Structure formats: C-alpha cells, structure tokens
Image (cartoon, rainbow, N blue to C red):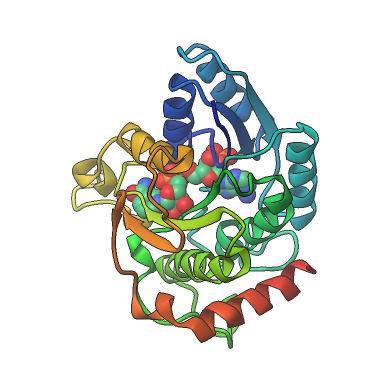
Length: 278
Ligand SMILES: NC(=O)c1ccc[n+]([C@@H]2O[C@H](COP(=O)([O-])OP(=O)(O)OC[C@H]3O[C@@H](n4cnc5c(N)ncnc54)[C@H](OP(=O)(O)O)[C@@H]3O)[C@@H](O)[C@H]2O)c1
C-alpha cells in the first residue's frame, strides 16, 4: 500500500486518479478547497474495494496561508508520502487575483504547488525507497516563453487561454528545476500531459461549438480514462526512473523549447521563491 496526496481530488482527473488508487488498495490524502465537495469525494472512495483509509485536507490553493495550513495538516497525519500529485488548476475568463495578489491561474496552478511541494518534501519517501512529485501539466503549455516582465497580465491584455498556457508552462519549468534540487534523494519529479478529457476545466478552455453545444463533450474522453494513467504514475509501479520526464499520457515526450530553457527554469524558481516568501 502506498500513500498518495492529490490536490484538486474532488472531481475531474484528480478524482478519477484517487478512485483508481483507492480501488488498488492505496491510501489517499485528498487536498480540496471545499469541505463538502471533498467529503463527497472521500465518501465515494469508501464505497470502493481496496480497504485502505482515506483522508481529506481542506486547503484553498488561491491562498498561500491556506496552502501552508494544508501542508501542516498533511504532515500532521504522520504518513510518509510515496507521491504528491500536483493536479489542481483553474481557468477563469476574466483576470482575477488570488488572496495574495497574484494572477489566479498562476497562483493556483503553479505558485500553490511550488509552495506545497517545498513544505511536503520532508514528508516524501527517500532512498532506499523512492517517491514521486507528479505535476499535472498539459500539452497546452506550448507557446511563448514565460513572461517574467508581466507574469500577472498587469499591463498586457489578459486572455484566459494565454494565462492557462503560461501556468502550465510554469508546471514544467518547475518540475525541471526541482530535479536539480532533489538529485540523489530518491524523489522523482515528473510532469504529465494526461490527455484531453471532458472536465469543468476543459469546458472553460474550449467553450462552445456553433449551435451552442459544449465543444468538450464532442471530442474529449471521460475523465475516468485519465485515472489509471495518473494513478499508475503516482503509485510508481514501474521500476523505471522517471526523474525529469515529461510524459504524454504516460509515454515519454518532448516539451516545448520554452519549457526546456534552463535559465527560465531557474529564473522561475527564484521568482516563485520570492513570491511565496520562501
Ligand atoms: N481536462 C483536460 O482535458 C486536461 C488536459 C490537460 C491537462 N489537464 C490538467 O489536469 C488537471 C486537472 O484538471 P481537470 O481537467 O480534472 O479539471 P477540473 O475537473 O476542473 O478539476 C480541477 C480541480 O482543481 C480544483 N481547484 C480549483 N481551484 C482550486 C483552489 N483554489 N484550491 C484548491 N483546489 C482548486 C477544483 O476544485 P473545485 O471542485 O472546488 O473547483 C477541482 O478539484 C489540471 O492541472 C489541468 O490543467 C486537463
């Protein structure tokens, strides 16, 4: 049995992975922002075969104070984590700020996971075993480089898909920078494009087709299909060393040139550390 913490685990891809892990007998820690939605997800896991216990930690990733409290609550459970899955993300139509004044997509999708990972690194299994930090990125990270001059769209026009692209690029830049900081520890940072699924997030991304239907329902798969991909990566069944891998639905892939830029990886790390007060 492994112990796996997942953010954004109350619906979509995160819930699908939690359900798959639970059915396989692994213990999960669901990190969700809403107590009721989180409790519903927890109850749905209890109904599955597998027999492990599951836990809910309530944390709003749009607040750095809440991320710190959530990390403390995970640590208080007393488990050694076999994986941390940085899965939660948000996509909003209008430029919105987090509690701490950062553009909210970057705040939730990247900064919160940057801080959460740092706070939970001491809880992750070290050699002779190993653990993973799986950050759910997206093929949608491809595009322009990270804009260090205006990361929060304060002066340039806000476009929701552009802000999403930047936040997903940040997920991969972060993963590669984390590799350099965990070498030799047994912790494997991995980034994943999970595939395309009909979730709340995708519906906000693609909008409607002519005639008014939701585009996501036309071409995307059910999020349940992402469950095994993410769960098997997190539970680390394979003996492969996936340190620093970018996977497309579980298969090694090459991320964009902007994601491979080491200077940008390190610059984002420094910017993020300062932003979260690390
Ligand atoms: N769907 C796709 O086709 C696709 C493709 C590529 C990558 N991805 C990635 O897959 C991951 C999961 O997305 P999804 O498609 O499953 O989306 P989803 O169904 O919209 O789920 C997003 C999750 O993030 C949580 N979340 C949002 N804001 C939060 C906050 N402030 N604090 C804590 N949790 C918060 C949501 O909680 P609430 O329920 O409380 O809002 C929800 O549990 C994301 O990283 C996304 O970028 C998805």
